[in-house]
Image 1: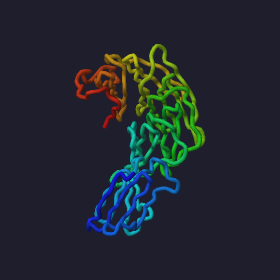
Image 2: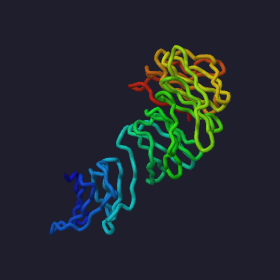
Image 3: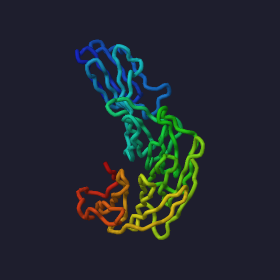
Image 4: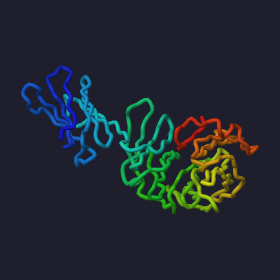
Length: 309
């Protein structure tokens, strides 16, 4: 099946994109095949080319896996550049140094981008086989947790997945990195898991199972305080000491289960959102709301993420 075709600007040639995972260039007057572009040594169904445009001296082809390939008609054997995107729902983003952005999607695909550039790099190796729930850039690594109930790591520079996967013992719902970058707190369906660096990898160093409620989200402040959103409509505060989490007070004002929590950069305020579309900003010294819980209700559906500037 040919999915797309495009004329060259001078009308002398036609390019076609096909389910056979190629782009072909034809002589418009004679119908003769002039050149074929291949996209992989062992093409997969996702390499089918489904969109095409001939822009000046460049042919642009879009694959089923979401890759935009640049083809030079004068040297068309292989793409000269490939911009990698997602064709499934993007679940999370993480910022790295020097304008690096890492994105992960529902199918487990992880891409690294550079702000101000079309350059991108896709994760290689064995990653999550299904949805990535949350992620963070920690030093020279990208840490991700996914619906395979594991924490995995990927080299930020090479985008190569490490062969090991750390079992979390429950479905992750969010993760947060503590100051220093050697401790990560993961909220799971079974409780809170404290993960710490061990050599080149990571280990489970502690676990806490809440009583009477389940965690929905987690954040760690600049001072190391941990806020955990609960399905009981409360924000539960913890003190993190080493790998131990000690429970503190709970913040109560939301009418619906908490969806996300986020600390301000100075750690003095906390934003929490709930399934009823409400946002509360808390004064953590007074443990009282700064902003009325019914001020911000413009979203049509429950909030899935919140951050401070």
